[in-house]
Length: 112
Length: 115
Image 1 (tube, helix red, strand yellow):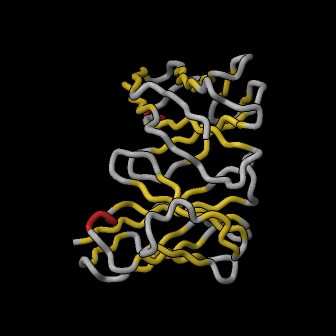
Image 2: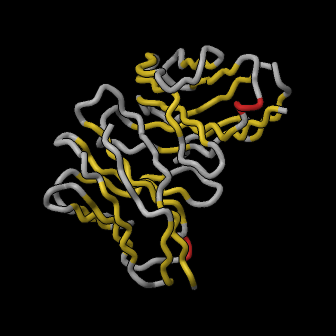
């Protein structure tokens, strides 16, 4: 399975945008890029996913580099509730299983 | 609507005892997943079902761990002869269908402590 690399931690101020980077230089053509987050004491929750084009939803935006070797999760206005561990995960559409492979993620701290 | 539920939420057991952890997925969800999460780490895949068929059990650590989903809905993860190293948060997730474009919805987890 292709591997992702994320910073261990990041800080942001409330109501400011946050850009969470992810490197995936060994991504294959059938890998989708998924982001999940895990709030303190809760289970992971889905944030967004994409294949090649940038994606927007009510929670966030996903910007995917043209060569697909990196991507950035964008929270447009961070709130205190966005403090969580954010996981960037590759899921192979051609694979035999649909498991999520979580790395260590990025711990996002949001300051008031 | 109701999300994924798990029971018990907390389980303390003595080393050597068997435990059964239950997962009730979102109604109608075809796929069900089990993960284990140690403190400070991301969840680690254990096993996965489509309907009642176990599709992948490559993450089960050894033969003390087993899982079933006999009617394609509720699932049970059983750990026999528990050991202290089995202590962890056990999380269940479900998705509408298999496939990488379907998000997984996670339950609150069962915190297992083996003394």
